[in-house]
Amino acid sequence: MTMELYFYNECGFSQSVLNCMTNLHCEDKIVKKNIREKAENETELIQLTGAKTVPVLIVDGKPIKGSEEINQFLVGKFM
Picture 1 (cartoon, rainbow, N blue to C red):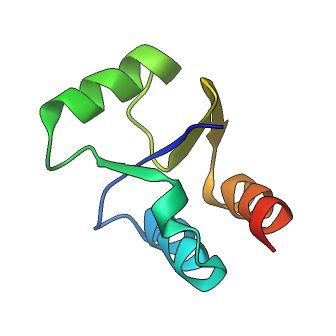
Picture 2: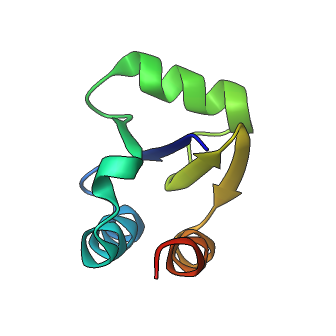
């Protein structure tokens, strides 16, 4: 299972997901893609979802949008 998180540091919703990942000790299992640090990450996100809204977790090519939905998925997977 491949997982990629599109985020940026100044986004409170992104921080919620990053904190959840830290608490679940799963940071090493998810590739983090900051859309503010690399333009190609933002381009990929737009191609995948049609928008540059973060956070988005891509799981095996399928997007999960929104911090609450992502956090629920992570808790179910890693807790």
